[in-house]
Structure formats: C-alpha cells, structure tokens
Image 1 (cartoon, one colour):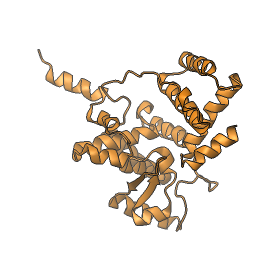
Image 2 (tube, one colour; image 1 turned 30 degrees about the vertical axis):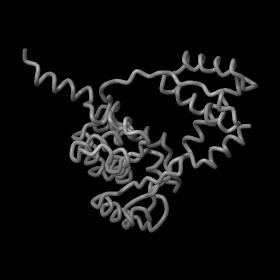
Image 3 (tube, helix red, strand yellow; image 1 turned 30 degrees about the horizontal axis):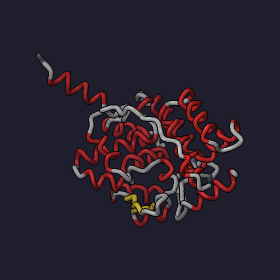
Length: 267
C-alpha cells in the first residue's frame, strides 16, 4: 500500500520532501487504522487537531487526501481546518541583518554558507530547490523547475551572484554537479542547513528566530516588491499557484508595523 502510494507520488513529479512528508502521514494513519473508512478518517482528523498546530494538521490532511485520490476514493476526502491568518509577517530577517549576516560569513571565509544564504535571498528558492542547483545552472544563469502539474517555473540567478559563484567554483576546481555539498561530497541536508544557520546567527549576535531557510525566501519577496511593485511577476517567480498567496508580502512585518505606529501616532 505504502510502496504503491510512493510510486504514485513519483509519477506525479512531486518533490522528494513532499513524498517523504506524504508517506509519513500515510504511515501514521495506517499505524492507528487498518482500513480507510469515513469513521476512521474523521477520528484521524480529530486526533490531528488535538496533537498538532493547524498548519501541520492541514499538511497531514493534504497527504491523506492525495492518498485517497490515488485509490480513487475522492468522495471520502477530508476537509481542511480553517486557519486564522495574521495580517502581518512574523520572524522575517531584515535586509540590514541579511547584509550583516552574509558579510560576516564572507569575512570568516565560510564561503559555502555565504553562498547558501546568498542563493536563498537572491533567488527566492525553497530549500529543496536550492539543493538542486548545479554548476551547469550557474553557468547558464537559471534553473528550470517543474511543479506537480507539470508547470514550468524558472529560477533566475542574478548576474552579480552568477559571476561571484563562478569565481568561487573555479577556485574549488568544480566544473559540474551539485554545488551545495558537505565535506564527504554529499548533498547537505535541509535539516543540516537549518541547524548551521541558527548556529551562525548566534555567533554573529543575530536573533536566531529570524534565521532559517524560508526566512530568506520571504526577504526576497518583500525586497523585490519594494523595488519593483509587480505582484503578478513575483507570484510567477515564487511559484505560487494563487496570487492571493503572494499578497502577504504586501504587508508589513510586526516589527515594521510597530515602528510605523511609534513614528506616526503622536496623539
């Protein structure tokens, strides 16, 4: 059952992270329920609500619904829980902290991590997408990505980053293959990146709460809109299916909101 589901996910071109996440959800379900019935699905949803945050609940529900699609039981799909969205962004690294962070990494000759941060912030890549970048992509200046619906999204590498990365790779005598490798020559793990970025944040006295891989994707989006106010283009660059997802970047962070209120409200 699980192997068939994983094969279904692979055939639909889902990312490795998504396949792992969806497979985990199905394992979790099967551990507690032997059969797929409406009663069991309802009990599973209630257990999820009691155990996890709403975002995680909906992730598990999406996984189970995908499984139901794979076995032609679409009519048994579980409705997601409603999430109260905040009217501000939280825990996003500021442009000033980003500049300070990358400069510290470069000054300490932590060039691998310097480029991890640079690529995340300058391309808007998800962490799973970052790990797909190869020397060949650096040389042509972009990486083509395909969504689960077969839709093409092009991840552009800005000229300045392209040139800087080429010089770095030339110094390493790297002519091909993936660029974000550990000392053993294997791809860095997403968990490894997250842990290392937190460690560097502490070293450089930056609030570690705002230093995580997706924070730099948020920074890319906010900075792009500040300098080129085209939300439709940003939605394409970010790979958002729905432009409403992109609209959150029109909002201020909670810190920015407070600064504006303190400046404006003098009555």
